Length: 374
Image (cartoon, rainbow, N blue to C red; front, side, top):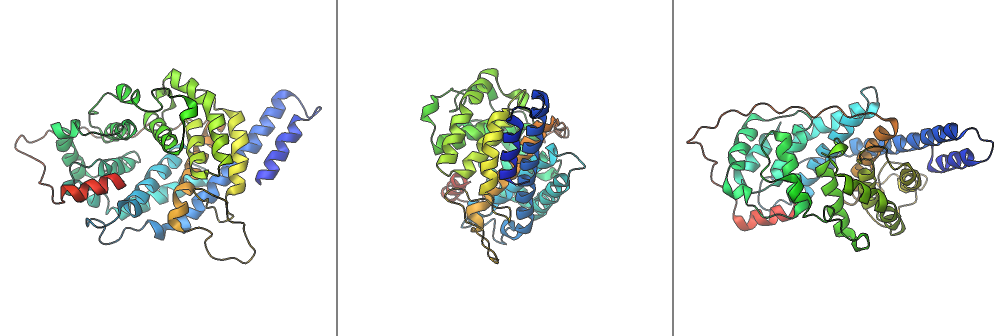
């Protein structure tokens, strides 16, 4: 079903004599669900067709390697597709596709060994921990990484690392997934964030928009646990997501639109169907036939016989993954499919008193740059 067909179906359902209100609602919900599912599947198909863009280079652990172009995309592939796998029904083809994509990402980390090596060289960096947690949420574990992570997380330096609130929330959620006691109180950290402070809605701009969406993801474990969202933040988001999404659509901010729609599908209780019904047909029209979406700006108009990718990989991989992620959450909420529980972490092995983390082998200046880029 196309975006235009879905819009037409909703319009037809609204006409007098089109049936009872309940029948109209079911027809509109079915049309919307079908549209979002097709958008999700095209985005996943593009991702699987472009796995070469996620392959890690041989020098990925070298200080000069750009994290934003290597480990960051791979971690996002694991995290977002891990959620798709969790919320898609076992008989849904997206379930198997997402599982293959996470398995590919895990293989790229050499089954976790690369992340263990990264943590050894940068024990004060949070991003190896967060990337690993994406795999742990999928049930993929590396004993050496977790043994070292527990030692590092027990240090004063780890507990006192200075971070923005939404980044600290990400680390707290990662600690939960790995099975480590969080280093700080999640509720207190949340209330220091842009979202948790119930900031004036007209103060939203691109940077605070991404801060808001990620705070929501970390609180709800990337949409898996919507019940964790506090009631006042739920009301705040339900009130202001519609105008924020409308502004993003008007300004051609497709990536942030997808992130906000993922938040909308991560709220407790009934999803905001009116918002989803207004926004998803627009995002579906922006999606290229190959499944990709640009992060921002006018979409490329499809042309007959055009074989080249419409966008460079780095200009569309994130927005495409986010679309698959948001769409999977939306389909699950519209269909009322609960996510399975998070895999229970293994019981931590006791630490050897004499054991200490190995010395860092990367200079502080270089690591600081890698942390900021991640």
